[in-house]
Image (cartoon, rainbow, N blue to C red; front, top):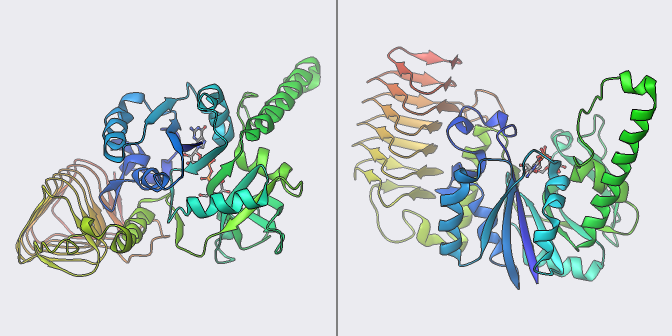
Length: 409
Ligand code: GDD
C-alpha cells in the first residue's frame, strides 16, 4: 500500500506570489483551469494501491475544505487536509502526522511539493525505487548551470544512481542536476527525522546549561521539531547508500512567482493535449471562438465567437470575453470581463476585474523578471483604451491613464 503526502505550506510561505496569494492560498491558484495542487493530486491517481492522499500545511482548514471534498469525489480517492499548528519545516510537517500516516501501514510514502510543475512520473519512480532498494528516491532534473543555485544541487553515481552529495541552494556551483521536490520514501524516513529532532533537542538543552550561549540570540530561532527535508535529512544521508535518484527528461518548473504560474499553466495545457484533450477548448470539437494552440475555457465562461484566443490561455468560471478581444499567454480569473477589442498578453487578470474596450494589458513575457508579466489584482478596473505594460496593480484600483513598469499599491 502507498500513501501520498503533498506539502502545501502556509500563509507565511508563498510571499513571492503576492498579490495573488492575498486572495487565495497559493496552492489553490488555478493553472490550466485547475488549482495548482490539483495537478499533483491527479498524478497520484496513477500510484498502484494508493490508500490515501494527505495535504499537510498551516493554512486555515476552511480554505481547503471545499476543494478537498470536491477533488476527492471527482477522483474517487480519499483526500484529507492535515493542519499543523505552526510551521514544522518540510520534514517536520510530515513527521508531525506520522501516526496518522502509518495507520494504513504503507510500504511507500510519496512526498510531493505543491509548487512544482512537471509530469510527475510516479509509477516509473516507484519501479526505480524498488530496484534500488534504498530508503528514498528523489526525482531530479538537469537545469542550466546559471539557474541551478536556486535549487538543491546534487551529485549521483552515474552507474548505481546513488545520491553521493547534496547541497541546498549553494553559493558556488556544484552540479546542474537538481532536486525536483518529488520523493518516494519507505517508513524509515520517520526514524531519520526523529534522529534529527533528538539531536536538535540535545543541542538546545546544552545551550540552556551554557550560560554564555544562553545569552546569544538563536540565529535559527526555531524549535527542535523544525526539520527541513533538504538540509537536515538529504544532505547528511547522501553517500550512505540510502538515497537514490530518478532523473526526468520531461518538463519541470518551480512555481514561486506569478510569472511562473503563466508559464506552468501553459505547460499543463500542452500536457492536456496528450493526456486529457477533452479539457481543451478545441479538443472536444466545441469552438467557442477562434482558438489557436492549447486553451482552457471554463464551461460557464462566455466567449464571443469573434474573439481570438491562444496559445497558452486559461479562462476561469463566469469570465466574459467580448467581440474582437485578443488573448495570448494569460490567465483570466473568475468573473473577470474583457470588453470588445481589448488585448491581453503575458498577463493575469484578477477576479472580477474589468478591461475596457480597446484597452491593452501586456508585458514582455520574461517570466523570471519581476515585471515580466502584468498582474491585475482582484476588482481592478482598466478604462477604455488604457494601456498597461509590465506592471503590477493591487486590488480595487481604477486605471484611466497609461501605466508602464510600475507597481501600483
Ligand atoms: N506543511 C508544511 N509545513 N509545508 C512546508 C513547510 C512547513 O513548515 N515548509 C515548507 N513547506 C512546503 C512548501 O510549501 C513546499 O511545497 C515544500 O515544502 C518545499 O518548500 P521549502 O522548504 O520552502 O523549499 P523550496 O521550495 O525553496 O525548495 C525545495 O524545493 C525545490 C524544488 O522545488 C528544496 O527541496 C529544493 O532543493 C528543491 O530544488
